[in-house]
Length: 445
Image (cartoon, rainbow, N blue to C red; front, side, top):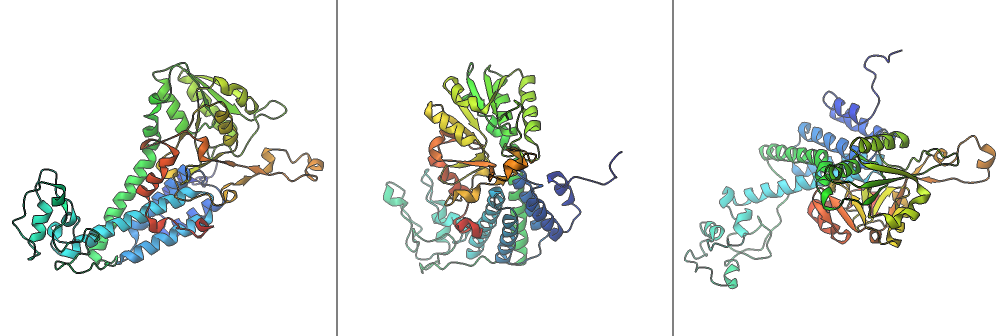
């Protein structure tokens, strides 16, 4: 019997389609409910839902103060993060959008401080270093407003000529220096209604760029596949996510190699459903079948082996490929259960471990308490409820994720390129503002 017309399964697709017609507050409550009920799960799905929701909020919000705009986004971010604290990708997107708002507000403040547009003292050009060609464009613009500055500046002949002119402190913040050389004063993040509308438009454009990044991340990561997978190699791919699938298929287009796909098996030799294995929205068997089918169609040799055989096969393996749930600021990662065991076996055999992750999975949170990052799943994935007499005697926990330390990882491949675990702090500094690092209260625990 066909399902009633208009009936849709709650999830990412239904939420994105409802954003076009639902009020903003209703959409926020809907996403909070979907996250709490785990109907939207996984870093990618949560990041996409959060970015689309914030784009809708910014388009419809009616505020004339940048501070109120930041507070509104911050409040929404807290509600979403509290709904599902284990999905750190939600907080990552919120932090990046808050950083966009702050950056745009500071640029507008710098332009308005001088009142002369790009020629103003408050503009970033006014404190920029002279160009290598010897032309001191910013210095000449500043001289139009600063009578104490000589217009007959000598040509740049040494490094001392790069020092700023009189009245401009090299430590001053752009947009806070006065013509007379007075001490800088921090300007508040406030603006007129017209500039707030312009700022919102710029922020919405920035959010759209984040959405585009989410859709292109897998293809960009796959672009580095030929640099890391060689012909004749044996590669262990523990997770069958779309990121790993596209990475392998990109390399298989020009090279022949073998993929080893470990899977947990039960006593009856059938694949056991382990809730910790990756792609949200698909159970274990459906995800692996899709992964194996796509590789087989492309002509890739795939060996599906029991998880217990990983250590024995590691000596013949060239590299291990993992797809994390989230990457932490210290270079460690949270990955599907079993990833730590595979990484430890790889370290024992000196086999490189490569982690594929988009920048949206990189969180500025440090693992002060690893237990708060590990989600516990349904114990029926380990043992069935039909063994009631046995269950009464033991306490069963089925962790969905493992915490893999940074020293077990050799290389991170993001949509920005390959990076060592020790370099991730630089990417964190480039994508997040210090004011937004501790966005949620539970980040401080």
